[in-house]
Every structure is written in structure tokens, then in C-alpha cells.
Amino acid sequence: MNNFAINNIANMEWKLYGGRSGMNMNCPSMYNGYMGVNNLSYYNPMFRGYNNINQDIFTHAADNTRVNNSVKSVSHGNSQVDWNNPQFRGLSEDLNELGDYYIKNSAPSESFMGAAVGGAAFGLVNNLRILAHPINAIKSLPETAKMFTDIGKEGKALRALWQNPETTRVVMEAYGQMHKLNAAKYWRTGLFKAKLKGENLQKANDIINEMKTALSAGNKQRIAELSEEARRLTNAKTGYIPRGLKAIHADAPFKWLKEHTFLGKFVGGGTKPSVAEAAAKSVTDKAAASTLSGSLKHSCGVGNGLLFAAFEFVTDMLDGKIQAAFDKDSSTGYKQLLQTATKGIGSAVGWSVGEGIGVWAGGLAAAKIGALTGSAVAPGVGTVIGAIAGLVGGSIGCWLTGKITHKIIGQEAGTLAQVEKMKQSAEGQQQLLQLTLQQAQEDKKVNPRTVQAIQNIANFYGAGAQ
Image (cartoon, rainbow, N blue to C red):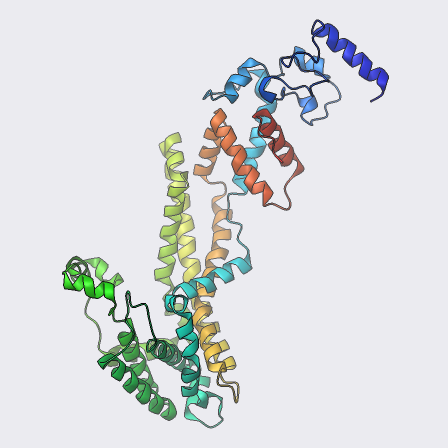
């Protein structure tokens, strides 16, 4: 802008404000960046980045599109905005832009790799003993690996058992249980499970010795039975806390819950099968999992899938979606419940199918990796891969169906209701600004129009978005 134009604007403002241009902060002018009291920008499309070349600041001012004292009162906490007032039309467009952006980015954005890593992490959480006592896990590796060295030797019965798809997972299970049993012989904090000693230590050594014989002979039934015995021994609650609760009979309610309610089956209650019965079922199920159809049929993913389905309801409740939908009206509320149920069903199906595929693929991979000739470590690596493959597959399946169900249900009724409510008050508008600002900071492909809207509303409320 040249000096002639600047002087003309200054002279016009001087006359408009009676000689107070630039001297009184209540008077927006070129000298104060067209700002008003409390550093609130006068909301003018020309100076908010719209580049409307057909109107100038004075035309806008005459149209009452500038912000006046009523806007300052809104920014100080008045709960409702009169959207019929022309002065809020520009602000309304920016709020609509923020609302649309927030809704669009409220859907899950996890990547394929993120889902895979999440499944692997879930597998680690399922083996808290490794997190609680990593040194024990490392110290028990050599003696466990030594028990399974025949897997890498041609002509050995154990190698044949490992390479047979129907029995690979039987050996994998044995490897995992022996590693757990060996680790339990070292020091523990003992809060829930004590270090094996005395009679229990003797039982552990007997199981290990018998397992060596069964592995050498390739006796799958006996291997499965010894694995079950090891599981029951290491799962026994022998720590300080369980013993203390038992001493004061505080375990009685929990015991009653297991024995007399439907919840008992979820917490280890009910009649336990014998070791032989449990082992026989294990062998049958693992043989079925050697084929894709059998793995899908015998997948235990239904339980985990239902857990994730329930998680959808809990998440939508904590996020306030369901409440916001019912606050609007009952039909919107029921629509959100249906959408949440659809997501839940998708999660359950996705996890079950994904885990079934993962278990099948994991068994094949374990057989290939674990049978590397001359390697005592390979069976352990194969066992780990086989153990987490189902969880990784389940997580990926859950992620995939999540993408599909969100395409099916479209925009969620509860989220729409939340955004609609936020746009109706100054406090809600600032909340919407904070939410979209956080999303935009993590979005590498954010639309410039969204950035402009964020800046406009931030300036309007004196937030100064970066």
C-alpha cells in the first residue's frame, strides 16, 4: 500500500471517529490493527481473510457485520448466541467449518501397523509375568531351550511332531509352559504368586523330567497332560495377598461368586475337568486349528470380541455421545444406541475372524521358524510368534471392521448433537475450538480453510491460535 492510500485511509478514519482515530482503543483503526477493547478482533470478513473485494470495511460496518459490545458480552460467558443477528453470520460459517472438521476426524484413524502393534502389546499384557519379572524370563530361556533341541535335529520324534501342522501348537504350548515353570523357580515379589519351593518345587522338577521323556518320545497326549499340570501349578495363587485374604476368610464372597453365579465361569469357577480331559480337548482343538476353516470354527476370539463390543458402549458413554443424543431427543438417542451396537457387533466379528486367521497363520509360521536345523533358540521364537499371531490378527480384524462399520453408519448422531450444542454457547464454541485445534495440530493434511476458521475464532475469543 502506497503512502497516498495510507494517508487517505487515515484521514477518513480521523473524520469518522471525530479525531480520535488511533487514540481510543474502542475505535478500530489502521493504527491498532482494527482491534477493540480486551484485544477482541472486530469480526469483519474483509479482515478475517475472506478477501471479499466487492466490499470495504466501511460497507461492512454499515451492514452491522462488525462486532460490537454484544459480542464482548458473549465472549465473557453469555450462554446463548442469537444466530438471527447478521453480525454473527461470518462467525457461524467458521463454527460450521470447525464442526464439520471435528466430526470428520472423530472417526478412528488408527493405521494398519498401529493395529498390529496394539495386538502384540495386548499379547504382552496377557503375560504380565514377563513384565513383572523380566530377569526371570531371561534366566529361564537357556534351560527351556535345551529341552527342545530335538526340534532342530532330523529324524527326531519331536521334530516330526513340531513339523506336523496338527501337533505344532501342542509343542508350542509345552514350550511356553516349561518356560513359565522354569521362571517360577526364581525369586518373585510374591504378592500374588510365590516362588516355587518345598513340595511345589519338587512337583515342578518332576514335571520337567517327565516332559523331557515325553518330548523325546513324541508322545503328544502326555506332552499335553504335563503342560496342563504345569499350568495349574504356576497359576496357583500362593502369594502373600491371597494367603492373607484366606486367613481372614475375606475370600469367601469371591468363592461364593465363582460357585453359585453365572459369573463363575469367567473367573475360574465351576467344575474343573481332569488333567487328562483338559489335555485331550487341547490336542483336539489345536489339531482343528491347523486348517483355516477349523481355526475360524474353534477361535476363542468370541470372548475377546465381546469385550471389545462392550468397550464400544463404554467409550461412547464416557465420550458423552449417548447422553448428548438423548438430550436432543429420544429418536436421536436410539439412533446413537443402534450405531454403537453396530460398531460393537463389527468389533466382535472382526476380532473373532481376525484371531482365527491369526492363529492358523501363526501356527504355520511357528512350524517353519521353529524347525531351523541346529538352532536351540528357534523353537522359542516360533512359539512367541505363534502365541501373539492370534492377538495381532484379532486386532487387525477389529481395526478393519471398524473402518467398515463407520462407513455404514456415517456420521454418529451423538457426535452431531454434541457439535450442535457446542456451537450454541460461548463456552461450547471455545471447547469446539480446543478440540479442533488439537486435531489440526496432528493432521498433516489439514485444509487451509479449517486453519483459517480456527485462527478466526481464536482471535475472536482472544486465544491467538498458533
